[in-house]
Length: 437
Figure 1 (tube, rainbow, N blue to C red):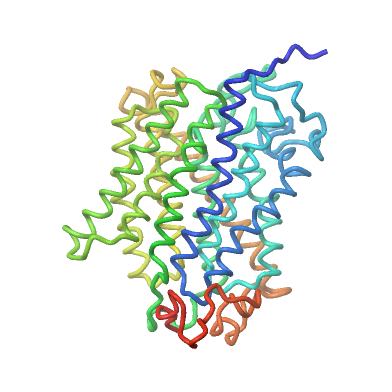
Figure 2: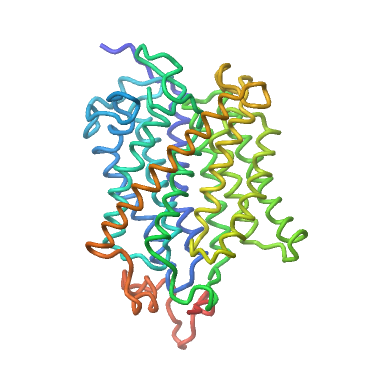
């Protein structure tokens, strides 16, 4: 008989945190949907929403076991011990939190990560091949990288068990997914853009966000859900969770303000609403790996850095005419990279980092070096395998819609529905005036 006992407080918090993280994917759907043209909004929302279905099933059957099952050696992948959630129940766990609840919390991470990639090929992906891509990517790319970063004895993970010394592999720190989620998704998005190519009319026709209130609503839901994303990664109602909660808000606020002021006062533009919302998301991305390891003033610095770096990454993308439709590379890739580096600079034992894993400003350089190695490993694997999956799908069944279907929009061509219906007088509903191209 197991000696495990459920801790009511920790379990209640993790139930709430899991629900908060799930809410982020519909939030992402609104954020991405508002940024697209009106003829593609339903298709864009569907890509995020259906990912909940695809990954929700695969994670329970196989993905969780690959990511969090006992390591098969070298910290590369878990085994199939937990296939079909075998031996994953409520009579075992850690910190008073049942294993089944930890599985559910990690499921929400596994869902939103491939959903992030969809912003890179918005407005041009066929729905059937998209479903295959999400399924394959979640098992072949996300699950192994999650094991490297989060799994016990993963080769990029500082924390070890079962008699394995703490210095095995690379001793990186990623509190809530800067590497496993944001760098991973950002680099995968880079590969996706190279396979899909530019949208028809890109650089010639206007392709503006069709519904700015929807963008802000999506960003607000992401911001709200991110408290579960980061503070929930403490896996308990602890002091470290409090730090992660506060750091999440501080960094997002700093990045939103920084992005707004740079675009307005330094670059001669107007204080953009979309820019403020995107800046907030960039700050949330960047603080994710550091949120449980840094002080609030250091989180503010990370948010400021995210506002600057991600803003200029977007400008660079525009100058290079690189059609990453919704700036996944600039926001999640660059933001996640900066966050991983920022963790190597600012991590401190006073918040939650192991004493032998403090950051550069606290006199240690080894963590920063390991963070850089982790960035390189995750980026290389994610890019190569993502490119390979998409290229094979493209050569066999084709991943991109036809020119006529792209012109008509994904809402009609892929789903047979319009996001906005004409009224009885024959006029267009809200957003139709932005349907350029």
